[in-house]
Length: 349
Image (cartoon, rainbow, N blue to C red):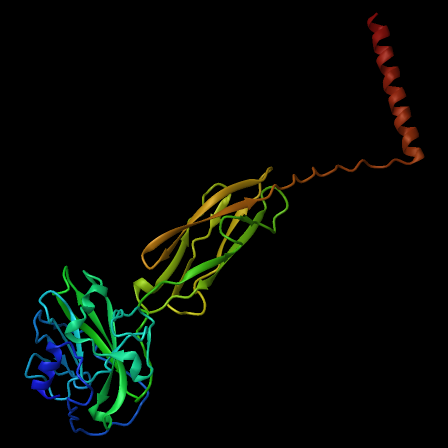
């Protein structure tokens, strides 16, 4: 862009009839479309708190204060010290989902950047876009459209992530990206979020042990975990892990670890399973588990229920059956013993 014309338009807020300023297309090799997002990776491009700010060529990564790099696409600056303003390669540069020039240019994660030129603006020095950005935070994003000099000057969509310090005058570009296919939407990444689990049996309710019947026998139970709300991204901030500790007494086990990361469709490591030794009466004890969602622990409780066992019946001792001769012999023996006893008593008398 003509630097003098650019300076004039920035100073008056960009409200000059379209076409006054010529757009200079830089020449370059025409790249084939691959349908991939081109990401800068982590960068730290300081945006000075003055009317120059920083000019950035999204394709080449070249950035500087004036003189601006060839083929620059966006210019972030301060028309007034301590404020934050947006300038671009033409009047339809920065995305505003509300399709109004004075709207909020700080876009949330998940925003899809695309659409007609009428949804893109160049607010310039008349609009302090800084009022909508979050201080002391890196959760600030802008969306834009630009001419890709490496692709026959076709229109591409991109985003940039900004870090703000304690004031809007302290800021930098920390990442940016664009889709390498012309007129293809790009989505601001959701970042890292941990999935949330659901359990069967449900947390807060009973977990019934089965399989045992007698006192001293073993009953078993398990708790399965599934993904109720998927997460996104990767790493510790996107990981959910559930761990439990058996409460002791008749209960043991439940030492498994259930894990899921980001948008995974299922958990790994489950189910949580344990056992109990049946006693003469039912035992109910609450087991507390920790569902760690990206570093934030959430308590989950389960009422482990071990049923009462039954006491085994004592074994019976069989009594032999006697026939008639045996009964007669038994009677005679008893009679003889009685007679002997009487005879002995008579002799003593």
